[in-house]
Image 1: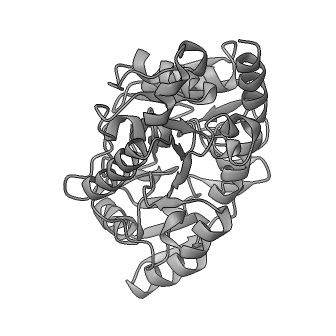
Image 2: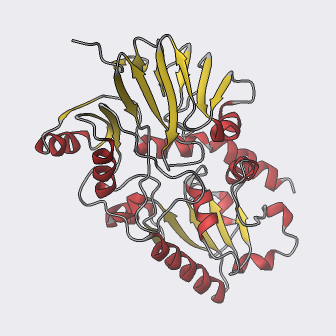
Length: 357
């Protein structure tokens, strides 16, 4: 029986014939990175391989001195006899699925991915590309039937309406979302004609990487750029979740606050966050999207990672597929926390920076 192309190891998902890891959570010699979120791209690896559009974001998050090799989508390299290519995942700028070909077999590791519905393209990155394979390693962040995303245009219409109503009432609109990916998707989707857009320093760092990669974002302001603070009463403020309830957020007075995330599908999640509004906007595939993506690969074997693994494995087995799960340290709930913790220094830095103006 042929050896699997990817196996579990304490360091992460390992390709034995290629002698490299995919999104390892412990330091290794060679790491192929699917995208730059903190639970997939970590510091300490000797060599990184990632998709070319992710270069700026990876260096912004991991340091300019990392040893980074990039590969255009669809191009391939061969390492120890394994042909490796990267294909768009539609999740965030530079996100990629990793295609491995060796000994006549093809495996694809998805990382995180977003499968667009009709008219729902995430226009801040390349859309998800189905890749035919024998074995597909899928995420399952939202792998429950309850998770079904509404049309994106309706979500942004709701955000615009909330922002417009707040501006008419003379209060700022504080919209929180992950600094990398979600914030830029919000910026690209809202009606920038409603009022000024102010962003947190952690968001602006990633905005620069997006703009340098050619992604169109509307003009954004930093607090220190605003001489007349009365304009904040009409502003949309985009910031990471870690600002919630903190000194930075209190600078906007009686602002209405909201959170944009797939988790907002659940009323309890909205209530626990203690926010005025929740907008269901995710950069992950929902339950139907996961199913469409898996079917499109044509894979007869599927391995499920982070999320609702047991539910997804059972559904796959009911479809007649060979299915199992890998235990990983990718975790969007943890990522939520990591995002908050990871941006603590940025928040403190931004607070200090803005406090010094």
